Length: 194
Image 1 (spheres, rainbow, N blue to C red):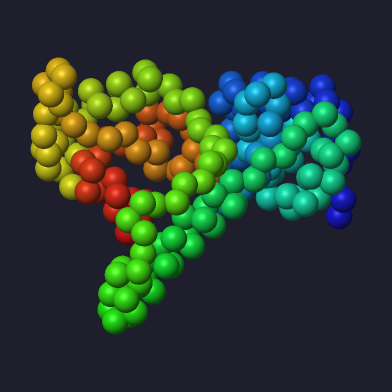
Image 2 (image 1 turned 60 degrees about the horizontal axis):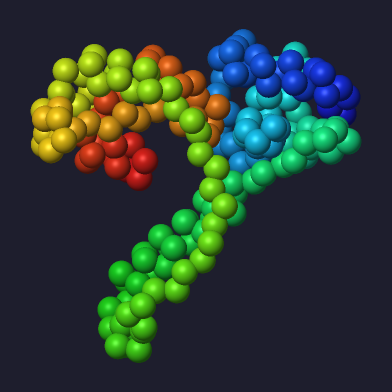
């Protein structure tokens, strides 16, 4: 099945719907690796296309959608490489933990000045009102474990909690109070790595 052809106007209508938080389909995307770069902003490729074509995001593959959209003046941005680089580092750490003798040898030979690389990183512009509302709702207690915030911020004495999106923004999750929770740093790390 071929993905339907859409015009730039339809795609921009899809972008406007996405920006207006229109989410007619209840399923979330498992993993979002591809984004559309339009007017300097990133939008999840599959969900934006789905809004433009008025079909569920799971109807067509990313490659089918890209084949249609490559005729339009848009750029595709993949975050897969960034995730893979991070995964690769953690794989190396895991391997190093398993082999103490080789690790000790490498440590003796390694430079203590780390190499550096430049990366291109996209980030979501989050709604400060969502963060503030979730922090007020939490009343200084982690919404996962129920414990009080581990410390108070030195600048204003407020309880330190981190606002986490239950469905990650990178997976099409909403930047909404309903999709966010205030967590202590331990619970927040567990949500990402547990």
